[in-house]
Length: 222
Length: 350
View 1 (cartoon, one colour):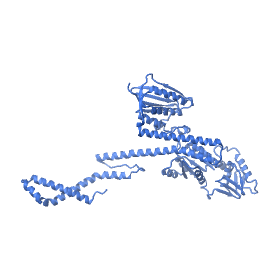
View 2 (view 1 turned 45 degrees about the horizontal axis):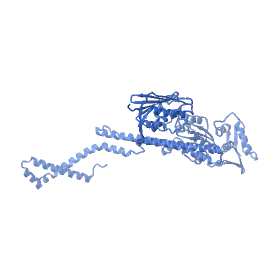
View 3 (view 1 turned 90 degrees about the horizontal axis):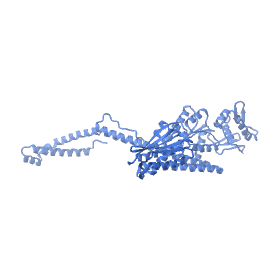
View 4 (view 1 turned 90 degrees about the vertical axis):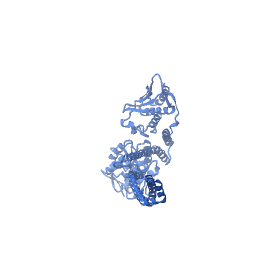
C-alpha cells in the first residue's frame, strides 16, 4: 500500500514515516504543496495524508486539485486546526477523514487502515485465498495454519497481490503501489521479490497460488 | 419595542392636562380686569368645569403629536437596535445602513459601525492568533507523543531510544520558549510598567552587545563589526529589554546569513535621535514579506528554514520593546544580498 504524506514540519514527517514504515506501508513525503501536486500527478497512491498549513499553499488547495482531477484516492487530513468550521471545510473540500494533532498513533493507524479498505466490499482486516491467510493488523501470514516469516517488502507485495486476488496485476501496478519514489523501474527487482515470495509461500504446497502471466505480470488465485 | 402602552399613556395625558389647566388659569388670571374675581372663579371650580373637556382634548392631541415625533426620531435607533441584536461573537459582519440619515443619526450610525468594525478586527485577531498558538504548541506535542508511542511499540536499541529522548527534550524546550515569548509580549502590551528605565550610554551599551555577538557568530564563521562615532550619547531605556531587542535582531541576522557572512552594527547620532543599523549579508527578505515580519509567528521563506529554530516571536517582541521606548524599527532588504534593520531611538539632551 503506497501512501503520500504531505507535511512541512520535518520532525512530524519523520515520525509518521517511521511509524507507517514499521506497519509495512510504502511512503513518499512531500514537504511542500508544489511537490505534493507533482507526486500526485505522476503516481498512483492508495492514500494521501495531508497537513493543512503548508509553506507555499493551503492543504485544501491540494484536496481540491485531487478531486478536480477525478481521483478518488482517500484523503486523511492531519492538522492542528480543530475548530468545527475547519473540519467541515476540510471534509467539504473532498477529504475523507480529519484527525487533529496531537493524535494517538494507534488511532491514526486505525484510520489509515479504515480508509485503505474503504473501496473493498468486505471490510475485514484478514484476507484469505485457499489456505493462505494474511492479517493486516498483526502482519501475520499463514499457509495451511503454518506461520510464514516475511520481510517488509515481501509482505507489502503479498498484501497487494492478495487485495487484488483473482485479478491480473501488472509489474507497473506493483511498482506503483509497493515501491516508492526511489524505485528503479528498469531493474528486475519485482521478479526477484516475487520469486522470494513464491519460495516462502508455494514451495511446500502442491497447489501454487502465485502464477506468472507472461509478458504482463502476476495473479494470485487458487 | 412597543410604542403605545395604555396605562402610561393615560398618566402622561393626565399630567399634561394638569399643566395645561394650571397654565390656562394663570393666563386667565393675568389677563382678566379683576384679579380677585378671577381667583375666586378659579377657586370655586368654574374654570375647571368650563375647561375640563377642551384641556383634556388639547392634552391628548399634544401627546399624540409628541408621540409621532418621537416615533419618527426613534426609527433609526430601532433599526440600530435590530442590527445590534443580530451581532454575536460568531458573526460581526452586520452594519447599519440607513438612507439619507439626518446629521445626528449619521453621527450615531457611524460611531456604531466603527465600534463593530473595531470589535470585528480584534475578534479576528484573537481567532487567528489562537489558531497560530494552537499550531505552535500542538505540533511539538504531536511530535513528542508520536515519537514516544512509536518507540514503545516494540523493543529497540539504545541509540533509537536516545534519539527519541533528545527529540522530546528539544521540542519541549521549543514549547517553553514559545510560551515565555507569548507571556512577555502580553506583559509588554498590558503591563508596560514592569520596565525599569535608566540613562544608558549607547556606545558603551552597543559595544557590550557587539562583544557578545562575536561569540554567537563563531559557529557559522560570521564576522561582526561595529562602527560608532567617538562621542557617545545617552538614551533613556530599560537595559534588559533593549538588549533583548538588539539580540533578537542579531539572532535573526545570524539565522539568515550563510557561513562566512558579515554582520555590521553601525551607530549614528542625529538631532535628538540615535540611528542604529544592523546589516547582514544574508538571504534578504522579499518586498511583500517586510510588512509581515512583525506579525506573530510569521516566518519568511519558511520552506528554506524548516530547521531554523525560534518561536517566530523574536521580531514582534523587538517591535513591542521599540514602541515602549518611543523608538521605531525600519527594515530595508534586497533579496539575495542582505537585510538592514534600523532602530531610531530618541536620545537625551546633553
